[in-house]
Image 1 (tube, rainbow over the protein chains, first blue to last red):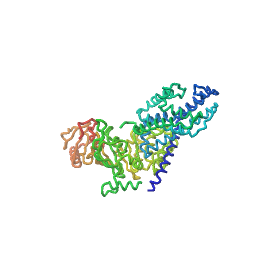
Image 2 (cartoon, one colour; image 1 turned 60 degrees about the vertical axis):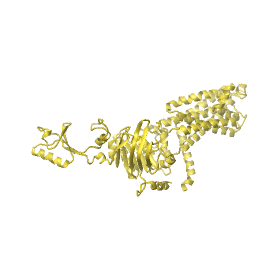
Image 3 (cartoon, rainbow over the protein chains, first blue to last red; image 1 turned 90 degrees about the vertical axis):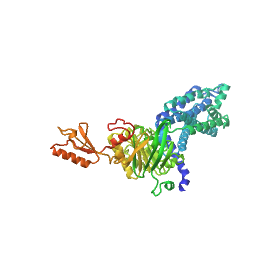
Image 4 (cartoon, rainbow over the protein chains, first blue to last red; image 1 turned 180 degrees about the horizontal axis):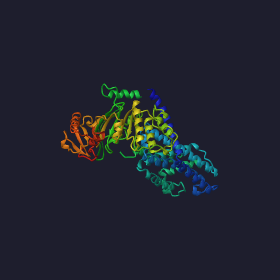
Length: 259
Length: 327
């Protein structure tokens, strides 16, 4: 009886325990810390140096170049921290038996995945803060509608985490993970306007139904101080997150050898 | 929670027994496609004993163990681990809190230290053992601050063992715990396992080393081709205690095997006499030698070694050559 009443508190403590060790593993691994933070920071610094002081133009939908790039590069960094990182890390952990070792303990699967999710959201928040700060250093005005940014960030991070786990569920071989992850992501990021605005109505309608462009737009509205919550795009993100979760729940494997 | 589980399990256990057996397996079957990995295996492990599943590679040891650990589903049969069905996901967590697993081909996060890795897993259990106690027990004392990636192969296996122990398990599964160890490391590992039994932990291990089964196990089951072909203590398994004794010696110069008072078979420059009555036969042979004023050089009396029994049971002759079918 006493156990039943203590269980939720114990589960919460367990989740916190898991998040702490997930953070520790991440910061100790120079590779993941480097690629997660360095790449987006370098890109936004280059764009900042190139476009500083540029005023609004119709090419950037009336925004200044940096008003456009701060949210899209922030979104790209979240993709890296959530989707790419999880798909690759989980395939590798499965391949070398780390996942099976986790499965050998009483740690519930949901705690393991919530720990990863919380970790990815924290890393994403640091990424977005860094990029916003560098943008501001190059004269980009800071956004004011922070709740809308937080909502887009959390929902986007969660959805891309779910998609990362889904891809890790579908890839058997860890060596195939990085190329498959990039093969999906790279064209999608380009076509979704993350590195240059796309002025094709047809293309935008297609990418608008895929996950990356809605995430860009959901961040761009509040970043450019044009709008707050972008419900339509948040809805598309949520749908992709749900689809990823469904695949992950049905197909995720802990054991490197198939049954 | 633990009390509750024990009570429920005891009610389903055999009448009159103090509690459920540690492991009960009846008619276990598992196929991978057309390959039958486990074909109707049955055995029990009593609480507090070390039980060894001994068999060659591919005999079905690991499959059996992984079914007991809840990693694999079974096709048929009844399996109980501490009174619970490991195939039923609903007690997965409750069962995992009471068992410890040391698996083959397993890795842990390379960038954490030994202490961090053990402390992390300790947090997964309701009543874990003390981290320092476990590092001491597994010979990892002094390595606590080392990163996992810098450990040697043998040290990583010790860490595996530490992770298996940290939850304070009632039952510990060890899958080929000393494969790849040098002889000293193996002796150390055996000592750790014996100490655990001394503390009351039940241990189910798989091995393909006869010496390991002989040195550690209270009971041994020999598994071959997915079947248990013999079960018993290391001293009695395969009729080892009642098998015919072998008397071996060098034939004295000037005599032939036909001169001896017993049926002798030449082997490796010696002659061997197999007998069900070693005392009588030995008396006859030594009496014969004394009467003829000669010596039986290199005289030995022995029984089949566990290795010979094992090879015979797993379908090989004394020299390791395959025989037709199992005896």
